[in-house]
Length: 475
Image (tube, rainbow, N blue to C red; front, side):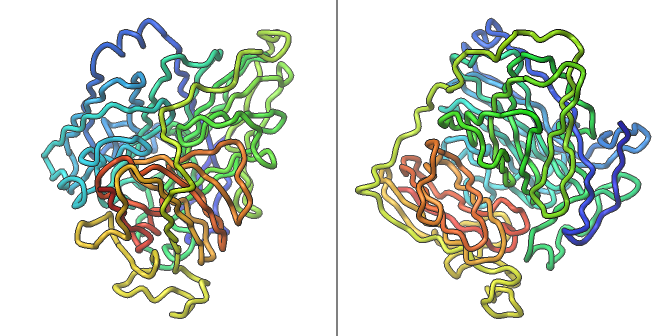
């Protein structure tokens, strides 16, 4: 299979259809996992400039920012309830922090500069320590100059193993990233394009899985695969179709849900979102089947192909092992007593709110929440949007008044997704990031049991940097 990549393109409609995969197979080793559960997991992570081979040609190495020289960063794995100690040593020429995305952790460990911790200056270090209460697929990334630092590679997966993991033949992880590359495989400049910032954001021309361009994924008929999907792109939304297969979604954003087939057969993932799916490999031995991303109109492309061995099926019929994952200890909100808050998403091009179609937020901001814009990566200078008593249930109504999609992320909590445009959401869906369509209303609820000032923002990084960000205070 030949691969290529195209130079950086300034408009969304000109995106390339190049994509790929290099799959990391994660073996299930129960004895090792039990040993890890008895002592803290200690990791040392050094963000620094590096060069990596991501386009399938070792002569073309891409200059990136990387954790421990790897893009994506090293896979951190630990057992549910085990302490993680992460020593971050800053090898960059600018400040940085690490946000542990989706983890319900103490506020001081959340990694937001100027809000929960000081930035880690060049040559400095910060010690993070927390015990993830939930099993699932999570990740970590820079939260300081995050548009550029994430866009140049500072992201990595964090897997919290269940105490009793499901019975599968393989546990695979796809960390999917999106890049805008020039012909020499270097990352294109121009992270602050105001036109793009007011539209889709910086969608790239090259997609990688686990940091590489395509290899077919070798599979065997009859096997069951747990596939962990992580969208670590800074702007690209994905809608994945597994042609010839029936993936069953068993978790979203690390939180178990009712096992179900995705709507219209497409797994929809905005930036920062994750999905765990079970795939029973029922294809024909010797054949290959595409996994297609067709989110953007007329820009469908094959992300990777499932290539079947010619060997006889591993089993004559699909596995009858249970699909449902064990529940996490996330408190359920009491909707009858919950406080209610409207979260109005505003701004961007074609919003119909004046300013040439762009919301006039002031200070150069293109976006806002309830008429206010917090730009950059967060600050303690701007008062919280609202305060809520610790332990109180809270309902958020996201009202998207814009013409663009927004993956809205709440730090420090997981929420139940209740309704979309008034219609109940099925499958007991939970998340830390919810994708809100243009002009859509989405209702979520959570228990505000984690004290501190917490970020609430769009995870399209240019939208965040352009003002689509605020904080809430739990006290």
